[in-house]
Amino acid sequence: MPKVVVRVFLLIASVAFLALPFINSPVLNDLTFRICLLIMVAISWNLMANAGLISLGHSAFWGVGCYATMFAANLFALPLIIGLLFALVAGALIGLIFTLLTARLRGFFFAICTLGLSEGLRVTSLMLPDLTGGAVGMFLNQPIPRLEVFVLAAVGAFLCIVFSAFLTQTRFHFACRGMRNHEGAAQMLGVDPRPYRLAVVGLSAAMTSYAGGLSAIYGAYIDPSIAFDLRVTVQSQIAPIIGGMYTVAGPIIGAFVIVVLADQTRVLFGSSEGISQLIFGIILVLAILFMPKGVVGLWERWTSRRVAGSNTPIQHPLVHPKVTTAERTP
Amino acid sequence: MNFIGQALIDAILLGGIYTLMVMGLALSFGVIRIINFMHGEAIMLGAYGAYWAFALYGVDPLLVLPLLMMLGAAAGYVLFKTTIAPVLNAPHENQILLTFGLGLILTNVALILWTGNERSSNPPYTFASLNFGDIVVPVSRLLGFSTAAVLIGAMFIWLKYGELGRASRAIAQDRDAATLMGINVPHMYAFSFGVSTALAVASGAICSFIFAVTPFMGFDMLVKGFAIVILGGVGSVIGAVAGSFLLAFAETAVAYYVPNGNGWSEAVAFGVLFLTLLIRPYGIAGRPAAG
Image 1: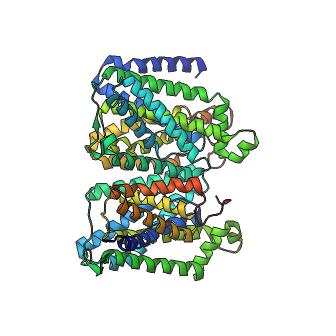
Image 2 (image 1 turned 45 degrees about the vertical axis):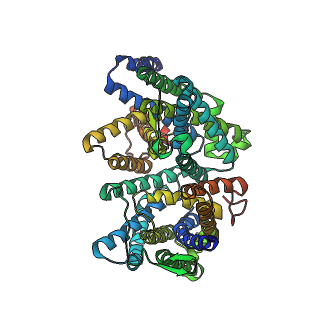
Image 3 (image 1 turned 135 degrees about the vertical axis):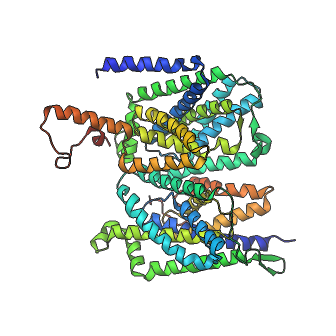
């Protein structure tokens, strides 16, 4: 497809996406709302993964966003939009502090610490009932502006997509990729990892916090197990993996797939929580084993094979294994 | 009334059980260099195995423990060969996500099969206790501690003198040199993973009459296990023992001396985790250059 066609298509798709809340169909709104939230969270996870920082604790950032929004609305009686700004700032702050604490860690150890962060925050919020309501939770004491929430979610997702697409053109993106492949080598080439790390985690945490804040407003109630729900962590990883890690389109495709899949399992198997989580687990394992580049990888392999096939003699894939673009980029 | 004696006894008994819990984690990291995010689920399945053996056939959890360990070792070996071995040379990300995904599957299979209800096996000694003056020693914890001590002792002897134990230590020291000495490294990896799973299953069987058994118990223990491993120094078996007892002492102290301590003691592990990373990121027994 020529590039112009793709761009026009993307433009139309995004305008349609942003206009969806105004159609005002409850089912469609709920579905797109959840897709938008997952797009933000998945892009945020992918951003960190791109720098080699695997997060197993995105629910920590999500929960911080939930509580920041609730505090702003309930304790200080601020408008909800300000509450969402609170969530952005609080998320970024937690991300920065966390990165400073774990500055020397990579790989496994960083992942373990993200897990520890989300569990630690959950226990802390459970043990401070005067502030958070403890296990009883807290209700939002303002009316929910439905339309605004949907529009804010769509705009947030749209901005995240544009932002992540813009990032791929910058030095920032390549520095992060360098850090992922070999931090020492990146340092030799003049990339100081620390500011990049701070920026990546801060941005990523802020995105997820914003999504968390929106979900808190939408649900109008939070308690520690909802705010620091492990499901957020799980979905935030699975969406980019099934779509294609380290790509712009991957998290978006993945978010659509995951939300629709979760909906369908709920229709098919009732509200049993275990089934959809089990399916997510199976998808995660199968994708890592057999499809580590996700849907985007499959697409690239398919298109490059077609292009290559048009001017070269037919080769059996087993006899002449072809190096595709998907495999070449590590 | 004086709590110190009681707190000390409680901490020591808890520390022994923690040690068994994390030993497999330390072993699999030391030998295979893989952090196993499904270790907690192996503990959970071991606990359910012991629970069902007791509930259906009335078999004492400690009697069924050897059988469960053998099953666990076999399952671990097969699981390693089929799923983890293919990603051993893949980037770290894939290994983390793969074991995390396997854990997710096991948790939810348990949730679907056995619901989220809390259970516990109740052998006759569950509620028995020995009294020494002011100090109360629950028999169940004492038995759990003794079993753990025996198993850990056996593992140390195996590591020190056993043929395969020596081979796994050799791999932990230098994988390439071990290969040159004729050690079948892929086989040893799968074998160590089996041993690590068996230890997890054993600690699960012990937990079944001490803690509540639920499909989610593994996750809590996993996070505690990581805190211990990092506190002790990653890959160090001695460090893991020291870390277990330190965490047990810290948790017990918080539970006894802080208001609302029982709830807060759940958060001690995370505090320990972050403090260790701030002050001494390579742990008690680790060396700065390691990792």
